[in-house]
Length: 120
Image (spheres, rainbow, N blue to C red):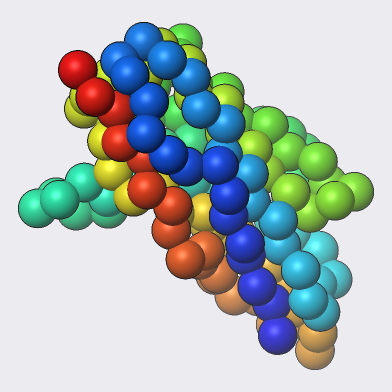
């Protein structure tokens, strides 16, 4: 089994910063893409940022220049540094990973979600 465990959410004032972490554990052969999605109340889940195994990154337009995704392949961990937070960044943030597991099965995995609330 593979698990993604997130940490680092919370309440912050507009303009503040938070850092999310997500560690993958279990029977992992290798990890392709790791990233973060978010879902605000009444809205669909949307991509925030992704990082490939070669550390190529991709960002949703509204977070470019404010959020930075990074990845430690040795620790199977992905981070999201969020700066200059805005109230519209308020959402549940989900970690995502595309993982080759035991038996060479490629599957998508999701974390349990962590709440980020930005007050104005």
